[in-house]
Each structure stands twice: as C-alpha cells, then as structure tokens.
Image 1: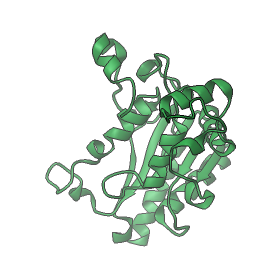
Image 2 (image 1 turned 120 degrees about the vertical axis):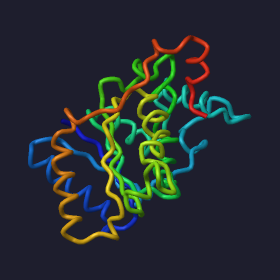
Image 3 (image 1 turned 90 degrees about the horizontal axis):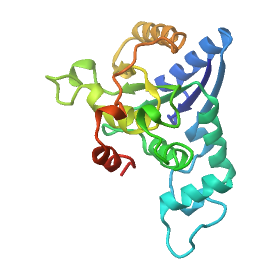
Image 4 (image 1 turned 90 degrees about the vertical axis):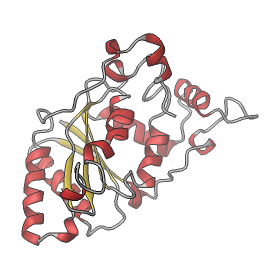
Length: 237
C-alpha cells in the first residue's frame, strides 16, 4: 500500500503525533510506503486565493474555480501546492490525522483541502462520487476528541461522531471518489490512563495494517439521484 498521512497537530508530544508515529512505524515495518505531510511543521499556508497560482487566467476578478481549471490545464499551481496534489495522486490510501476543534477540522487542515482539492485535480468535468477523480482509492479520518465517548452520542450534548464527520466523509472524501473507511476515533486521550492510551495505539496499529480491508461507510451513488439534483451538488459551496 502507498499511504499518505496529512498530519495536523502543532505539538510533537500530542496523542495525534503518537498516532502518526505508530502508523508510520507499523506500515514501514510491514513493507508499505508512507508519506507524511506535517502541516504545522511545514508552515502550510491555509489561505486559498491567488497565491495558489503562478499566473492568472483573469487578472480583473478572481473566480476561484475558473483559475483552478486554468491552472490544472496549464500546470500552473505553485510548487508547494503541486507537491501536495502529487502526493494525493500517488497514494492508495489517504489519512487525515487531526483533533476535532470546535466540532470541525482544524483551520490549517480545512485550508489544505480548500487549496489541494482543486477543480481539474480533485473534481470537475462530471467526475464526482462513484465516478470521482479518486475512485479506487480509500480515505480515513483518524482523530481525537476532547470529551469521552458518551458526550458524542445520541444522548450526549454533541451528536454522534459520524454526524460530526459527515462533511468530511461525504463532502470531501466521497465527493471526490474515495471509498471512505470507518473513522478511527480516540475519545479524551488526556482523560485516560497511559495504559489505556497504549491500548488505543495498539488498536490503531492493527487498523492501519488492514486499511485495504477495513470496514467502509455507505457511499452515495450517482445512479440514485436524478440529473438536476446531482448537478446542484456537483460543486462544494
């Protein structure tokens, strides 16, 4: 397997960092190829605008998708952005490693998606969902949340984690064609014992070694939606 991990945590002693190290060690020892983009260590710029492009299709007004389509056709993305796109194209499996912040992705990871998942490289031209650019690849969220599991349940103050992750699973991974692996979640790593944290890392090691056969989530199929409905959904807003 060729695995690309987008690691998103600013602290090298965090449990997210431990998860990434565990994944890299397990996968490399098993003979798999691994690339990690450590967004904070890279100083990745999350702002998506004209800085994405070396040149301009239209200097009068920034139409983001039009500029992305032009850049895709003319290999006109800036090198640091093209490098990330190449990693996504290279991998068999994409992992987002992150903590839930404010019931969503950390801003730097959302900005990475905004910039890297560009028209012509991640979607467009009728390519989405089961016919998406990344069809045949798998993707997974590996994450931590601050609270314990009951907080993220039907009876907790927050929704079940599957609902919180729906924008990522359906709106990012599913939309661009990835088969979505069930998320790997560690609840309250700062509220549990060292022994419990070790058990979670052992469990995660087993998960990453079975990414090609791990359980997947139900996917949207274009045949289940009529033309107008699908056209209205073809571009993220």
